[in-house]
Length: 324
Ligand SMILES: NC(=O)c1ccc[n+]([C@@H]2O[C@H](COP(=O)([O-])OP(=O)(O)OC[C@H]3O[C@@H](n4cnc5c(N)ncnc54)[C@H](OP(=O)(O)O)[C@@H]3O)[C@@H](O)[C@H]2O)c1
Image 1 (cartoon, helix red, strand yellow):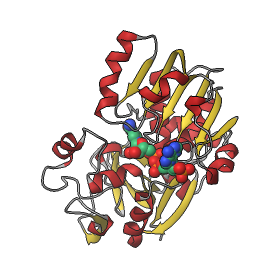
Image 2: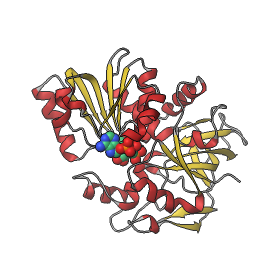
Image 3: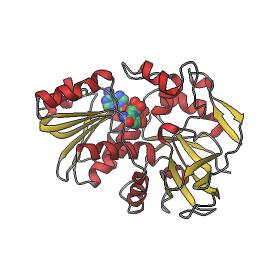
C-alpha cells in the first residue's frame, strides 16, 4: 500500500511516498481503508522535533533518538472497513467509520488497523469523510481538558486560540456544556469563532483579555500565549487554567499554584478516552459539533499541507484526501 513516510526529523520535505506492506487485522482488529486524514499541529511538531520549552530531550527519547521510530505521521482518519478480524462483533466490511490513533500515529497510509473497542466509531451520516477525519484530535483534546477541569454549566470559559484545531472544537464543546464562551483570536477569525457559538469574541490584535478586568472560571490556552503568570489575574478565585500548549515551566507551576492559591493549572498531554470519539459522533449527529475545515490537499501533497500548518495560522483543520 501507499504510505507517506519520513526517516529523519526536519522540514516538510522529509516526507515522501513509499510502498509499504498492507497491515493484516488481528482477531479483534478492523482494517480501515483511509479516505481522509489530517495534518495537525502535533504532526508538524513530531516531524520537526520542534517542541515546547523543556520537552526537546524527552520528545527525542519517546519518538526516537536519531530517527523517528514511527515513520508514518497522522493521528486521525475517516474511511471504510476493508476487512475484520475473526472475533470482531461491532463492525462489518463496508461500515463507514472515523478513528483516532493518538500518539501511536500511523494514519498517513492507505490502510490502518484499529482494535474494534479502540477509538473508532461509525461516521455520523450528516458528516463527510473529510469532516469525520477531523473529529478526533481537537475534539478529544478539548473534551479531556474540560473533563479534568470539571467544567460546569453556567461557568465562564475563555478560549485563547479559538480558531485553531483545538480551539474550534473547544468553543463548540464548551457551548454544548452550557458555558458562557469567550473566544480569543485575530481579526480575520472573529466571524468564524462567533459562528461556532462563542457568546463573546476578543480580537487579540486590539484587546488584551488579561487587562479588561473580566474574570473567568476556566481559561483554555491553545496558543501558548496565556501562561499562568499572565492569566492569573483573569482567573476567578477557584478558576482553572487549561494549558493545552505549554512548556516545562507551565507543568512546574501545577503544584506551586495548588499550594499557594485556590486556582488550579491543568497541563500536560490530554487524557483522552476511546469512548470520547463515540461521544463526539453523537454530538455531531445531533448537530452540536462540526469540525471546521480550512484547506484540503491530495495525499501526494502532504508536504505542502505541512508547510501551511507550520505557519501556525490554520483555521480549524487541514484535510488530506485519499478517496478513490
Ligand atoms: N496538550 C495536548 O495534549 C495537546 C493536544 C493537541 C494539541 N496540542 C498543542 O496545542 C497547540 C494548538 O493546537 P491546534 O491544533 O489548535 O493548533 P493550530 O490549529 O495550528 O492553531 C492555530 C491557531 O492558533 C491561533 N493563534 C496563533 N497565535 C495566537 C495568539 N497569539 N493568540 C491567540 N490565538 C493565536 C491562530 O489564530 P490566528 O491566525 O487568528 O492568530 C490559529 O487559528 C499545538 O501546539 C499542539 O501541538 C496539545
